[in-house]
Figure (cartoon, rainbow, N blue to C red):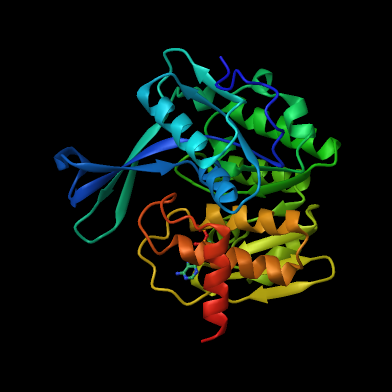
Length: 323
Ligand code: ADP
């Protein structure tokens, strides 16, 4: 069943594909079995990305599978409230939308416990794709996590990337490597092929070092560039990002902030960078804008609550440049 019976809604410029998951954050420290209160949050890198794009003022649609349970319903409410097109969200009868718990050890380290096996998202299949929705977009975004959850979702992500590439839609890809989800050799093979299908890739420096070993950001970017993408963006946390193209190397320093929670900063960064690409800004302007959005996303708890609107980003950049 499609969530948006109203086909014929406006075609969004950006289409994102992946797995949404609801997050439950422990409100006290200790082992998960001993925690009794949790705060709900939004998870799923490609869903965070879609909300980030919508807040930044470009049209975006999300392709995924959710259950017809309460958690699937609250995601649909979130996307609709944020203006994300849900017409290609598939709602699975009797499906249980994936969830995860974050518990906090006494030393402060976070542990993640996932309940996503057999989730609707893990059953995403090539038949779920609406090729036209991808072909008519300007930009298609997806991630490595979306490929890690099951073989069928992996093949579906590849197929969607191929459809986009064949019709000249710009493909952007964040490997978002999670070794808990798949063995490194499988991850490396899949991500390497995804790099070939993508025009722009957004690995973090941690992803790059796990995939390629101890290497400088620039050397890593050059290696990845040889695989095919036109733009390699290495996310460097508080240090901002490094952008390498065939004829340009741009180092864009991070903004100085005191982060409260860095969850989702990378997803928001990807969304902002894609907005810059659609705006046809220079690489320098796009990188600065994405760094500002990434930095602003660290200022409050959660991945969605702190996502800024365009005016906030512009004000932030102006205020920081006056310092
Ligand atoms: P990921 O979340 O994918 O691991 P990063 O942690 O590198 O990615 O964060 C993504 C982007 O968010 C960075 O490239 C930077 O622009 C911004 N960012 C993240 N952490 C900070 C920080 N502590 N200070 C300023 N900017 C940050």
